Amino acid sequence: LAARDLHPHDSVIEIGNAAIGGGRFALIAGPCAVENEEQVMASAKAAKEAGARVLRGGAYKPRTSPYSFQGHGPEGLELLRKAGDAHDLPIVTELVDTRDLDLLVEKSDAIQIGTRNMQNFELLKAVGGTDKPVMLKRGMAAKIDDLLMAAEYILAHGNEQVILCERGIRTFETATRNTLDLAAVPLLKEKTHLPVIVDPSHGTGKRELVTPMALAAAAAGADGVMVEVHYNPPSALSDGPQSLYPEQMVALGDQLDRLLGAL
Ligand code: PEP
Ligand code: MN
Image (cartoon, rainbow, N blue to C red):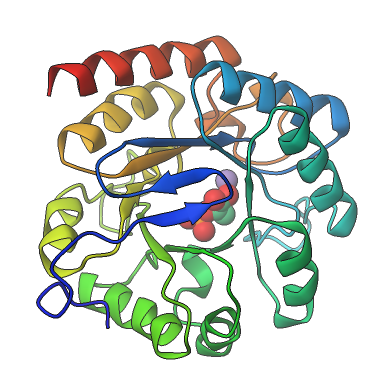
């Protein structure tokens, strides 16, 4: 169902009032985690000013350490909704447990499946049974075909609204958090009709690499990028080192516009 040969034209997936795919580049931005009202409001404002069309933020965080901030759950989702509504931005947030599915279906405009759950088949089947767009992130040790088969699970269960996200993979290189596989973009676009976006924040783990890799993703033909922003990255409860400052976020929006205008 995901294959390009059976479905030659690009799928366009609607997240609220934002269409992803089909030619218009989409900026998706927001904090890694929803921490408090002031923080999520400031992040949403920066996202909006940068030209973002979707607000992202985590309420349920899949953290490597059980002692790290795990997200505020339902209250976090409520704050994300409030910030999205205040700035007329649809919201996308991560689902980590099927028990939270109904709440996310009710409160969010799109559901993110993170790298750690790309092959959590029960989660894939569960979101496949909803009518919410799904942003499926590539597993950090997943091949391109594994990502496509994970998407196939969602499609096979009746939900055709899937957006693929390249977010970097594990390699021998430790200078960056992950190795961003930008070749995956044109390759995926050859193999599938589904929109493909890139996450240069997790893909590099380093703030100074986010802007160049977001621009490179646009040049490689991605349908959009997802970027983390925080009003005070040094104080962030998660992913501060890769979060842009608000003014960097706005500058990235300008640079993307100029690059896309030139392409
Ligand atoms: C995130 O988007 O904040 C996230 C946890 O991403 P990933 O699943 O790619 O690590
Ligand atoms: Mn993050």
